[in-house]
Length: 262
Ligand SMILES: Cc1cc2nc3c(=O)[nH]c(=O)nc-3n(C[C@H](O)[C@H](O)[C@H](O)COP(=O)(O)OP(=O)(O)OC[C@H]3O[C@@H](n4cnc5c(N)ncnc54)[C@H](O)[C@@H]3O)c2cc1C
Image (cartoon, rainbow, N blue to C red; front, side, top):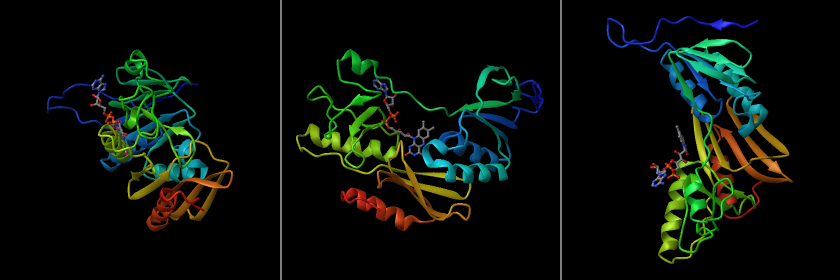
């Protein structure tokens, strides 16, 4: 059976001026989609989130934090359509794969980005889902540097070549690249970190874990007082916390000093 959620008047300016949006469909249940959802719910707008994931943020933060985030947003009135994708958008209608239709005044797509490496490939720089750089942010072509979202660098903390999309990483990599253009010979060793705000809850994340074999939970996620360590082979690759800023900073410092954070 296919269901149609909501009926909206035709989009466009009303006699009293521009029509205010009442309902939005957010595509994607990761950081951008959910921060947008929180901001819109705070403004009283009805929000439907459509995403292929089993849990919001589960791929990055694991099932414990994923469950918490889902409950948090649902309590604020967000309606999730998980393990689902949009198959088409036609005017005010977002059609889902299962046949349901969601009415929306506007749609926000927070479905991730893919680096455009065409220019680098034309210049014959080595690429791998980004532009490959060494620890000095120099590409395979001496004298050409890359930094920020486009760069995949050898991360000393995980031992992997990683690419991250965080503001502070981009800034710091730019600084390192600039110093190395001036011949300073400085390695990029900073530990990635970011935070994500959902209503009155802030999640702090430090490190980088694309995969893990264990999540050690300290405290109580539902009580908004927790520290989660993402471990692989007994090593902490990353940590996520709520209301535990000091512990989070201590893990960052340990990682920066090349100590295996425990
Ligand atoms: C909606 C959104 C929310 C985000 N929120 C957060 C957040 O809360 N915290 C966080 O840490 N990060 C966040 N990020 C990620 C953060 O914005 C990026 O990591 C950061 O902007 C990367 O900086 P950058 O300089 O590498 O790339 P960009 O900021 O994308 O800058 C690239 C620049 O290069 C220009 N450009 C592209 N191609 C060419 C070309 N051929 N020639 C010349 N110029 C070119 C572009 O026009 C652009 O000006 C967010 C990103 C988005 C999209």
